[in-house]
Length: 370
Image 1 (cartoon, rainbow, N blue to C red):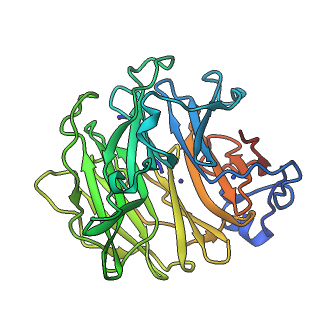
Image 2: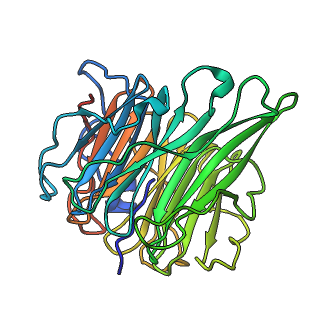
């Protein structure tokens, strides 16, 4: 089976109540709530991806500049490199950037997407669009391609409307086609803004394949959404979630180019108004989903099998500090590692203790930032 990649968007530890631990050992933490006693490093966004040999590479944005660190070896317990400025060529293409999404190409090379605003003059601005770069080959030591415009937003004097991307998710389908879904806000010169989902995919499974032009996702969700999570399914399909007003919406796509996405439906009983989502693959082929809701509480649920139509557990609290974003990916031994940003911009991380599906999680710890 082709490796599935998800993107998806955390010292101290966290304690579960005895009843929660009894409900599922997968949420068993040891320790106290995470605190940031170290000097705060104000990071604004994060995203993690997998290199071709399974090592993880973490990206972070601070003050509009991108930074990166990665596992030094394929050992899941290997240390991380020091943070380095992430500086592919053609940096003059944009003024500021924030982390968007990362996913593997079919040859295992990593592709990274950033939300970017261009330089002045405003009249020539591309608005908040999407720029992208990718590893030039499947070799983990390969360099990165020059930045390229992936989706062009518009704003400024003389523009009939203001179009900006504010969220993006990416996943590699079983067929080898990389799929991207974006949230676009559009506002006419005089009128309220509207939000729509746009999607774009590779034309073929070749790593150097061109991209199909962006298209509105069909159908659009019943209401505007403000957060995304996207995962590949083992049948070449995709599963997409979006945060609505007090509802988490869900849709699937079979992967058939001649078929539309399924009608949107409510995903379980929402734990509260959610503003961010993250999803990752479990060792048994199932999925685990996280939702951050108003008030700062994080909830999670999961499937126990790889069946795309299998049942999900009820939402349960994933104890920890108040978070504004999450990003998750599997280590080389299958364990999930999770990162999150709290509202001060401090980065935390935790990981599964073992690759067993019923394993608990390590205590939260501060992950040193750039």
